[in-house]
Image 1 (tube, rainbow, N blue to C red):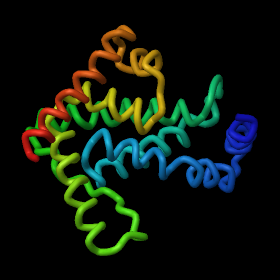
Image 2 (spheres, one colour):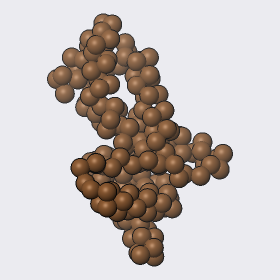
Image 3 (cartoon, rainbow, N blue to C red):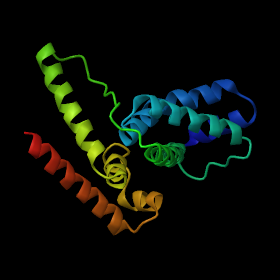
Image 4 (tube, helix red, strand yellow):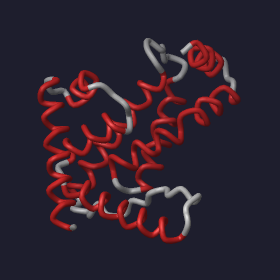
Length: 178
């Protein structure tokens, strides 16, 4: 957190290197978070870049009150939610996600993992967005249900229920495919 405060201070004073360091430090995790929420690699990249552009635009007035990672994750979640709503209004399908597969396995293992990721991606796209968001934020974003509830503007119990319902939905979808 001390490094982040120093980087923000340097950004306020015009340091491009400091902003580049913030970008390099958080971009990958934020992109993965957005990709999991949106199930669309290109949209995830757009969302993350929008978040960094917004940060750059407000950096002079920006005050870091807690963790920069938490702030940026919250921004990504909000932008992803807006993007999902917009896409839903346009009735576009959510099936263009591309998962990164580690390449230290043999070809057979890669095919098995790829098929598994495709099934999981399909299953994730079938559950309601609020449930998917709760799952991704808890498992990938490593957020507590209290934080998820605050982001979703619901009670902690509702956030936990969305998570459980999402997992149950995934199990149902995945078990029906097996």
